[in-house]
View 1 (cartoon, rainbow, N blue to C red):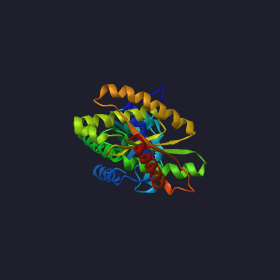
View 2: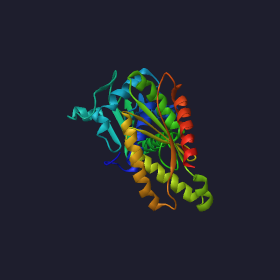
View 3: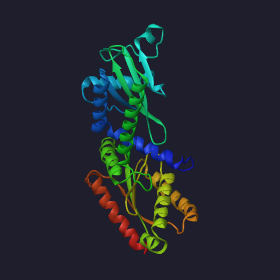
View 4: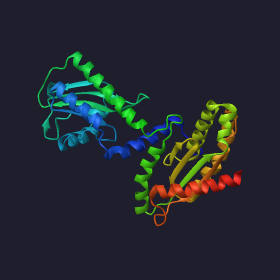
Length: 312
């Protein structure tokens, strides 16, 4: 992020987006069950959770195909509020709504936006039917309630991979990304650096100033990492005072980021009760030596402790 650093919350959002894309291949069974329940409750042909950059509905090939078609349709992407459509609108000249989705001739559709915790639209919960039907105000409220339930499920799914204190990826999120990216980088002969950080004398900060001061130091260090590395780099808190970064690209990029960290840490120290110091182990991934991310992390951990011994 260097000179054109972006705000912390935006960086976290980008990271979460990256994590969600990796989850594309993993059906969210809870969201799928909600969609199936809504489908039966309203008695429509289909209920689809159309998530931006994802295809949630996977109960059948038909549901999946319909979701994929709707995800790129202006019918969905331009809708910022709950909408209801029936075939008479098309007869009266509206071209905004699709005539068909998959093999279904759309005679009725309704949808409600799904929202992130920041208020952004993450997708829509949609009803589709091949028969016209009435949709009362009570139906709209019910659809809105179910959309809120799906939104909560999506937020919860994202939080599984995010560290609650710092807002960056946690160990599970880091490993999820790493296990996805390392084979890809290996196949395309891309250089990967993994950096393992451990804060120096962190226990003494907790002992002398209290756990709140320790939490402040952890949050400050997370911000230093985020602002020092690029948006495409994976920054994570592994637990306690341990952090990791995985970055793809020329080694000089890691050199620059580490230098930038020193500058930002000095600035951050002015806002907390103690300076931020750390030890770091840096390893370049080599498929012939390392057994996946576990092997790289073990190597980086060992190098970090060697540096920590020198720092003491």
